[in-house]
Each structure stands twice: as structure tokens, then as C-alpha cells.
Length: 104
Image (cartoon, rainbow, N blue to C red; front, side, top):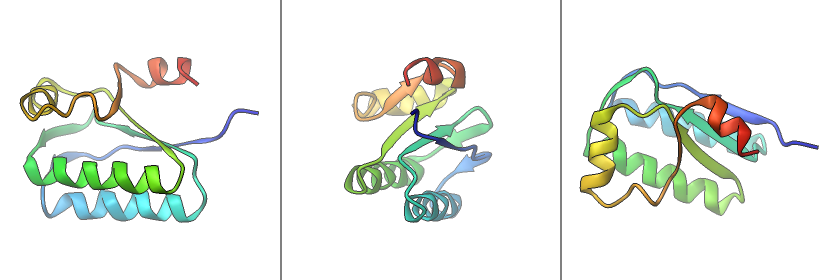
């Protein structure tokens, strides 16, 4: 049996203000015993350092809950931010939802 995947799709800018909402969404699905969370970044226009910090916090929370977190469809700015901060290896990153589903 394949575990169900919860897909979150934030939009716009991920910064100190907006990332709190994403964290609350993830926390909510973890409370419902979600085992796999995919954050599809296709509609994210920009991620700043605060947004990245919350993603690290989300990663730690999912690890502690025994869940899997993955990201997909990152834009060039987000990829560059992960590269510059040496964090690209911290996250499971996929080119698209299709690529992610092939990994299940």
C-alpha cells in the first residue's frame, strides 16, 4: 500500500510573514498523521532567507514526526539560494510532481 501524499502549493513570496502560514499547514497535516508531504514550489516567485529558515524548520518537524518531506518545481532563484547556502543536499528535490511520484 502506497502512503498518501499531501501536496502543498504555496504561492507568491515565501518570507518571514508568509512562511508562518506554510509552517502551520505542514504542522496541521503532521497532526493528521501525514507520512509524506510534497511542497510544490511551481507558483513561488521568490524565497528569502526567512522562508528558507522556515523550510529547514519544516524539515526538522517532519523528520521528528517520522514523515518524508520533498520539494518540487523550484525556480532558478530558489535553486540558487539553496546552492549559495549549501542546503541543496538537505532537501529531497524533484523536477516535478511526476518525478516525485516515480520515486514512491
